[in-house]
Amino acid sequence: MTKYLLSLFIMTAVSLSAAEPGDRTPYIHHFSDGHGGWFSDRHYELKIWDGAAQCYSPWFVDPNHAPPGAGYLHLVMWIYTARHWYQPDMPAAARLPYQESSFADQGKSTDLRYARMTIRLRGEMDLKGAQLYLLAQAQTENTTANFILTGQQIAITEDWSDQTIVLANDPKQWTCIGSRNDLTHLYGCDDLDTALSDVNVDLIFVLFPLDIEPACDGVTDLHGLKADVDYPVKTSKLPRGIIQFESVRLDYPQ
Image 1: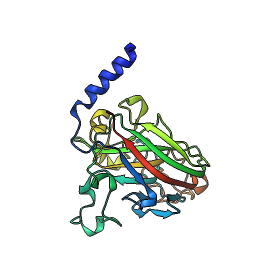
Image 2: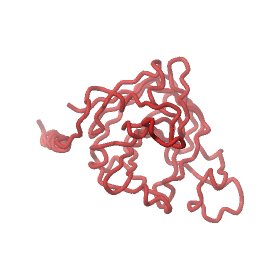
Image 3: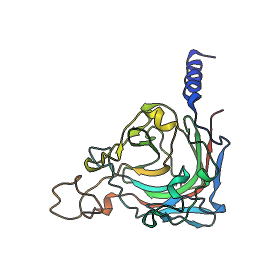
């Protein structure tokens, strides 16, 4: 074993020593079996046609991480990783279209350090400079941290293909997207290992970054106001098309 592989093995073993309890058998969801608690865009029910999840533009612009955060993004498809986010006693205004998560309901471990995710997908996209990435969101003692795995983009192919990413505990591969000025009490940055050891909010496939340009005159505070909420944006600058997901699999390191 080379010194590099030995050091990587030791780092992985130490990193996983504080693993949260939970089922660490593979998480596998085929969309031919239904939505499985995955959502599209904001809180919209996922459309399933011909055994595949259909995610298509226009997507809303998420302004929560506008500068001085890392920027704007589209939420393509996502799932809660902890059950308390969708319990029946949630206030009516916070209830979601369906109260389940195939990940959380199976009791899967939220320690995702070095987990391997394989997505079977295809699509036809005009990305406008964005890429498809995985975002992991976790509540820590200090903040709600959002990390995008910008070191490993997910290719969108015309034909069905399996794309694999690894949630490596390597800060060089992740971008903490922080918060817009008025939401620093909700979002921020924290230690990557702390976040990946308990991804207790959700996993999101995102399109990032977005090129935001007002579609009207008179917008003097581009990032202080909420794009696509307080002022319209030029849709010609945004990604458009369709992404179809056939399955998502997550394997934990042994």
